[in-house]
Length: 299
Image: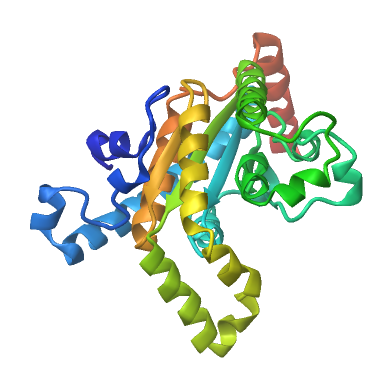
């Protein structure tokens, strides 16, 4: 189990301004971890990750059987921040019948003919399910904010968007998530925070490895030119949309084992905090089940 102080370091306090320079992207978050050393911390982290995977499997079974809550996990981050790998390693042990992953690409013409949240509604989890959004409606206040031409395609009436427009969009998202939580959806939001140097190394790694060339997109390199703009957009978004009902966690992402362990811990711990129980059968149902068992035993 990860000490609560490390989880608290990641959580964005609602209403508090966000400066991402104050969030460490590496494995050594304080003097205690530094003293323990990289090898020992990594070994302990991987043990914790495996434990949380097992607990997440059990938690999902309860979630499915209880059929009251659903879970929405949102992953955001710069290109190469490790979203795909986090999904693969954290969710690898859950039953695929109760877990769906959606990766959102550029919107279609049909999706552009609706409001900016419409296409996400269709992928929300049903009761008992876990849904993972690899990127999400938060792209509408990130990439769309950096590239205004994308917003023009949405054909929104009114003047050119300014601070008032983005403030309203944040409010729409908060209201949307509040509605979901009031109806039983647990929302967990993770920003995988990598350094610019680490992104460079990961992009170079893809270019040097024939088996990873397919993952490289020229657009990734172009978007890197907007690094500072994206950091500012993320800071504004985290500040405006981390709420008590749907908090944001800034996850150190330069070492993948750190990110995966923290995400798994937060998901597993939060689902278990719901204190779910398997449904109880009535006395009438129990009597019928006893009769059914007797019939099977007498065959």
